[in-house]
Length: 140
Image 1 (tube, rainbow, N blue to C red):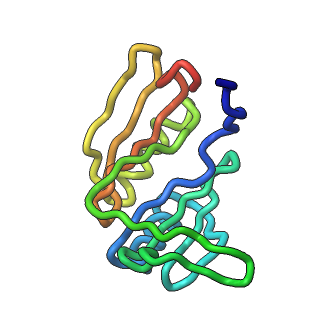
Image 2 (spheres, rainbow, N blue to C red):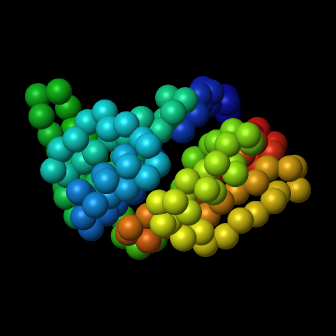
């Protein structure tokens, strides 16, 4: 069997939230992400390096969405999930200080065998977010 074509990276990550305005405020005001698209059911944030963070209102995207341009497959999720943002090693302490100033409680910190470090905290919906420096994985 022939090998599949190369994947260039993860483009989108989705979180599902109970309160869109609250979630948008957190990702915009606390993490400094810029919204690229805002609707009642979806907000898309520029997550850096061609990455997009999609925030969906829970239950609002379960059904397929069909238009004259095609169909987007329905999807949804529930419960706390995990995602990580890449940060520079030189910004780790500034991020820790910024989260403290924004009254975001840290859930944990980790120093990885390759030298990377991670900060763990939650968004208002209980999703576990991570800010990770290079040295976490062989490819990062």
